[in-house]
Length: 265
Length: 265
DNA sequence: ATCATTTGTCTATTATATTGGACATATGTC
DNA sequence: GACATATGTCCAATATAATAGACAAATGAT
Image 1 (cartoon, chains in turn green, cyan, blue, red):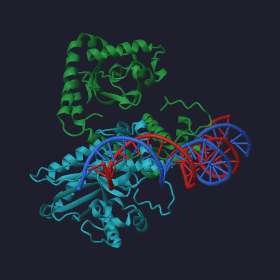
Image 2 (cartoon, chains in turn cyan, red, green, purple):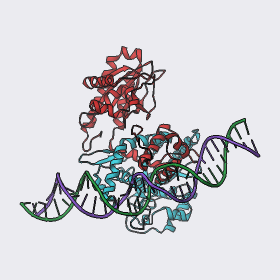
Image 3 (cartoon, protein in one colour):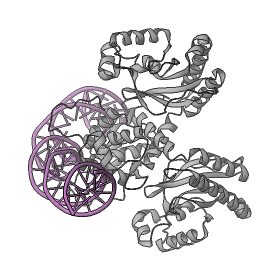
């Protein structure tokens, strides 16, 4: 979305693209907004946004919510999302795997995927600690910031990775710049060992574990992750990794046992 | 969607509308399809469908699935649907209410809403009988065919109801025609008594119970339904209705207790 | 009360999206 | 082989969608 460079001025953006930009924006904001605000914040012409919002309202893709003309994601999106979920029926197994990992380790377990060229937490199960570590489900995060990111782009070539990840995403939250070469080396290493663990780049107190969940062509379509305090993460590394890997395998096995259409696209 | 009459020939259909027509079509079909098939079955120009499908693929709204160029609802729709679900967080209470009703009565309990101008089962919990009655979740059904339909359009005026429901939907599955006047009378009666029960029109062996779940403005935004064999339905009518009503109330109560944005739009 | 900002509606203009149909392969049937 | 059907790509024509900007009402600040 933001990766697409429209250099030439005087260009118009296609309605459909703009529409999904609006939907994605609301998803990230996670609260109803006025068309005017939306237009301002995504940098789109107000008239266009008003027109599109009305169209989307008519289709049930957006609903009025929160009063004062504010709109939010609509009921129809829930229906469409449910149909997706039913077709690629991973919810049940996924939930079970997360619960298993979280209860075994006491740490926060996450199921993560790519959302376009970003990383996102699809489902999460918090651990049993008094102070639990959690993150926002559904939030899009630059791929290089995450352990899972090293696994999720493993099927791409070096140049594909460079093209795929927005250049700005190599700038870490603390302002430092991560050399793409370094990142790619980590990707390859993660691909070989089937795991990636590190002290998180996005904060100073967590250690992250990620293992791949393989799809049809042995591609990594998702990851199972564990987020723990650094000390515990280093101490129980072997145990945590084993737990994650067995859970990831059970997910993949469930998939291959299923007949008909593939679980993961 | 199909209700919108585009009489004038030589007219073009807007891409956005066509796009969501495609998405809805896939949702109903519930399986991956080739662009060509889609075009043929929804009666759209092939070139248009190919173009739109490619656009939707680029946006992650559609994904390749099932091989041979077939496409199905994409991952991004799941993300958007999840955000909707999280915002209008009814899933948990809803699931609990359904489980409660199903276990108390032993019959199939359903949570139903409008999907545009159709009726649809959003969530369902089957009963404990050896032969259980169930229906497809997510399938769109003409409003007049259902008990819930009498409640879901209760906030509309007579003429609004006539305009809202496609004329063809008054033709029942057995070919008979239901007089809109009769239907509207039933709607009003259901509105007054806060319930509607009848021997189902769509088959010969079920009895349906529906009670409203009220939203913000005391509008019926959803229904809780019970589907039972006719004999049992008539015998235990009072008991079943009481169970449904208490469950519906608990759902509505949970809603009002919540602060901030309203649970139901 | 005055001024600035926010919000929504409504045009006219023009860049372009939608479409019919031509073309090119598969795939299947007889 | 001959024929019909299914599938995907491409292009030119024109109907129309995206946009800038004018307008006005509502809101808020001072």
